[in-house]
Image (cartoon, rainbow, N blue to C red):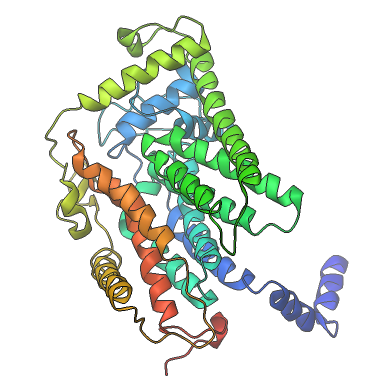
Length: 437
């Protein structure tokens, strides 16, 4: 009781509210980030144990992750190991010791909670809206616009479904856009220590993205392009030697993370298993890494086509073929990966409108009226990101699914939010100053 009275007295002291308000003013992005965190955590973490049976890709990635943390039997997967290692490591820290076969969709977890295995993807999914908020701010968006962009991701059903299960996409997206955020933070660093740290961490995140799926190479190319463009004369010119030093830091982080993941892969899978039909590792890390990459590329080329829930690349923005995830044993409940129509259909329509406007502005040298004093944001960066993430998939012969569009979708939403902000759809004031006018 004495402690409670002291706490209440401290809260009632004059100036407590004033100090809290001053702290928020000193960190103007703290309030929207906190709101996004609470909303995103609720969407991704509440009820994470439901359903208590295996859904969609948990058949594959649950089995693979269990091998790392529990039975250590060698397996082969066309994707690199890094995200599965994070899933397994988190599960092991929470006490998961195996016991689920992950044989088929609908298989019961029995006495085991699914939460330890689902937590790492869910945490990545919960952080993604915050990462996009920061990225939008770095690209020139006002606070309210960046908050709106984060909300679009919080309330998208497709992203939520894929990041609430044992899957790779949440980790891939968080690493991809996190790497870009860290690179842009290095661009604006005010000290050498910050510049070195952010550059190295950006490389680490890029290495994690590539180590999750090879589509993570998109962010490697995009950051590389940013570096090259800074060599050209201009306001933000970096210079050739500093560019090489930063490239070295980025590569060092990426290569370190990528190699550590593969070293863990071969060291943890120490027992014979189903992957032996692809060849038993020889014990030489470099040789085994080179060998398995050839096998992975071959496996991607040989994946079966078609698949019941596969879909062509042109259909993804239209959500023409949602993915079946799970149904209850009595078929009273169903789970499909289908996006929020506002985000997917509305975002696609607005993205096309923005691209047409930007192309017309380039041809006519006329831009629509913008908010006075507002600098033109870096539209080219997310547009190039969209093209790099989407266009190569049009030529892929293997079966693809709607979730392959996630990276391109987020880049398109960033373009739309930047445009809406630039033309004055939102006020330039902070989040609490927005109002309908």
